[in-house]
Length: 304
Ligand code: ATP
Image (tube, rainbow, N blue to C red; front, side):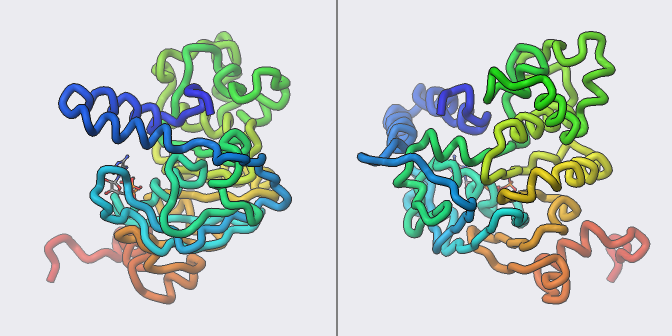
């Protein structure tokens, strides 16, 4: 992965690494060592995607420098092409960490993550990261045209493909309404686009890359529910032969998933479909009642 392909969070980690160096030299080297630790294993082969089945097998993980305190423990699930997995849970429960392990920003221990039976630690990083797309909330946009930003993973992309991706991400109509259309320059970090437009642009970009596993990490938080629904409908064709993971605080974003994982304290504490989890009457149900029950059903604040 080149630095241009790094999600903002990774770039942030690097920048943070340097920033922390001024106060703590040892920590910098720990962090940089971690970045450098992730490299191709000797004799690594390219990932061969036959179907695109993603498996987490009893995955545990702790961040470097956390004193071995686990961020994730015993995470197991399987996702088949065409399936959508929703991941929900309280802040800090480890949802984004799950997303970051799939393109191997960090290595897991214990356990393993496989794609079509191949341990991701044993394949080349380049082939892995071509197969896994992570759409983040705060993705990096370059000071260049909208079309270049959408196509940056593929500089020879045809105009029609760029436009189709923008259409699916519900951005096309906005773009063609701009005086310079697709050649409009977006400012540094996409300053001339709203948060929701930036997110839709990064969704379009990820569609261009056609990964086998596509992860949305809270990437629709700034998009209104109606537009999100239209994006989901437009993406149905695209999602048909790949695994989609949706991490979101908003239940309406993932309640249609084939399987929903409720993560708490780094563990999956509930799993099932929306209906199964409602019937279970546990954590998911409580969150559902908080978020989706009509206002007049809710007890008044302070009511006994
Ligand atoms: P949110 O819903 O707030 O985005 P989350 O469920 O996605 O949270 P994570 O971002 O995966 O949670 O974080 C899980 C835990 O790991 C938190 O305690 C967080 O502080 C810690 N953490 C996250 N990133 C790092 C990092 N780069 N280094 C050290 N600890 C980290």
